[in-house]
Image 1 (cartoon, helix red, strand yellow):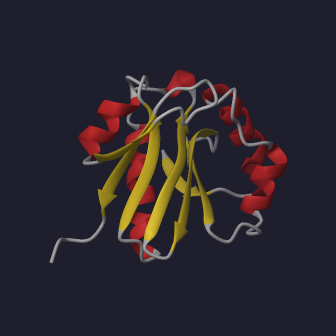
Image 2 (cartoon, one colour):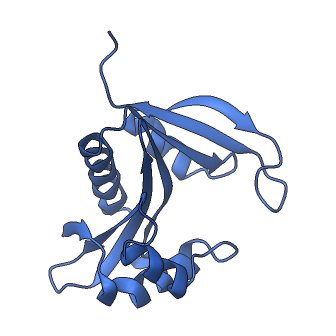
Image 3 (tube, helix red, strand yellow):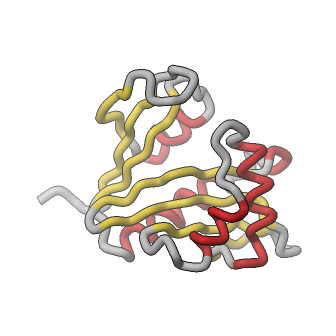
Length: 151
């Protein structure tokens, strides 16, 4: 497996993963294309590909000055529990550091029993809660990961 910046040929595969992972809030192929074309200057899309070059996961991260926001991370359903998400998260952390971010923020549903321990194991800590953050009224938990050592 390899993680690399997503390219134009990845749009359809990433759009399909978006629909699988986020059926109520998937990025459209058109929106993904705009991001991949560099027309959203803060957004980076990373693709995890297998040895055959098939996209098996992706991550979207936005970096604005000292703050990076992990907007989404997804792995193909049949590829889950194989460490792909962990590798993608590591690549996002590396990217954020390279672009000068001091911390990464993300929101996760309070009922996402797979994501919460995943981010906890990676060192993210809860810093806030957003009541009724999601369309269905679910609470969002704001997590942060510091990229710089405390002074």
